[in-house]
Figure 1 (spheres, rainbow, N blue to C red):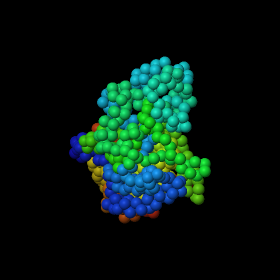
Figure 2 (figure 1 turned 180 degrees about the vertical axis):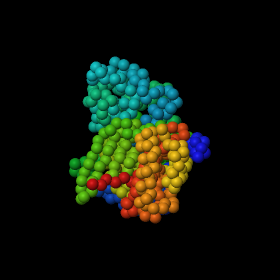
Figure 3 (figure 1 turned 90 degrees about the horizontal axis):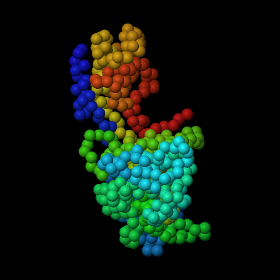
Figure 4 (figure 1 turned 30 degrees about the vertical axis):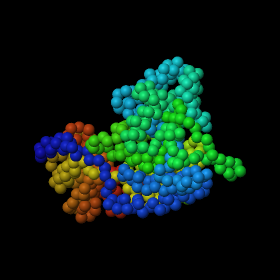
Length: 523
């Protein structure tokens, strides 16, 4: 029985000790691709109902732009059709590019997210905070909309062309606060205008040049730019608004300025596909070499919910719907009744509306870009998720059991077949027989054995994570679920162990990443 003690350290130190989750449905891609006609129908209906002059959308699957759809024209005068190479302004979706620049500088040791903003913007040293006990504003507050600056969408949308001199003058006048810093969410374009200056000062390179060279060029987003004037007229989507009389009016484009870091990017469907594919490539965590301009762990950090925003619940037609939303770093993060983790961001400026979203655990993302003021095409994306779910194509990666869980399953099964105190003590963490004496645990197990009869097979481990799982015993008079958790020791030993007879009609297996077709809300 001493073999176990020497075997477990070698397992936990092996290169496969922490296997990443993986897709297991061989028909997954075919199921997803079969829904694309319905996805197109959803977007076209949305564009028609909203009278959008031109729109493009795309679906990203497993690292590539798998589908593109278009509607309308990029210019109502020339009537040039929208294509996957048409450049649209994506407004606040730019914020995630700015965060990538900040995190790249952080990863290179050129700044810290805990740096006071005043380290990189000297005018902040004289900034009057709202209370005497307010802590200095830090870079992380600016990234996560927790600085306490007022929500400023109506005002911020018109500041894209503000000059560096304008920004300096405003900073010297101070910024009014709407909430105490670091206490709650408040969306601020001003904050991301400041981050552009941080990038410039920390890198020694103008913000636009840094993002172009360090992010866009590395991702081969060759048709993306922060300068509206750099886009050839033949490829540029013209932005429009609908006037009170129902006619269209062209919105004059705002030039690039100090607030470009908050909303100045222009891009195409082909480039947006590359961008979302890059974000999705950060999942799952794994040992593969880094290939992107920013570390995968930093990309995942962007998608963590750092500042909670709101919880919404509704009840309609017997269905309960709920979602929790907050802000990561330059990205919105949501959990709802379907998916545990939705990442995305919208963008709206005079003449344009856009949205992007992806499901990290499912390897699928979507985007849409439109040429109508604040058209916000998140609705058809949300409807498309439902269509993909219904077709069975959206299934999360499943976590395979770690070697140590599989090894421990065998030793627990040995105890079930023939209890041996020495083996039980060998696999037990120090708390296991303090929580319940060994004789009590042996008796409880024997009681269930007497009820279910002979158990001839132990099923595979269904892991909840690398150190917790469940397996089922198939017995002559029923099924027994075995639940166990390993302790944070080397080698990991059993800190929790429970045998439970399962109702044959309600056998429950631990789901490694949630139900196959997403979360569910039920009454």
